[in-house]
Image (tube, rainbow, N blue to C red; front, side):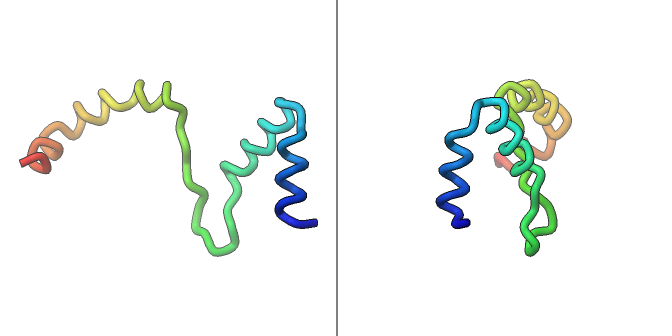
Length: 65
């Protein structure tokens, strides 16, 4: 089966099953990769940003100079 055929099958899945495929793909790694790229939602990003900036305020100030 080709990649194009698999993609077509995924596109035609019901939303719940498509979500399962995406969840699997986020965790999966290729044989040449050390680990998968992590992705967070925009909501989680917005929640974490203030803490990161507060924690690393001095570093960010120095980098901005």
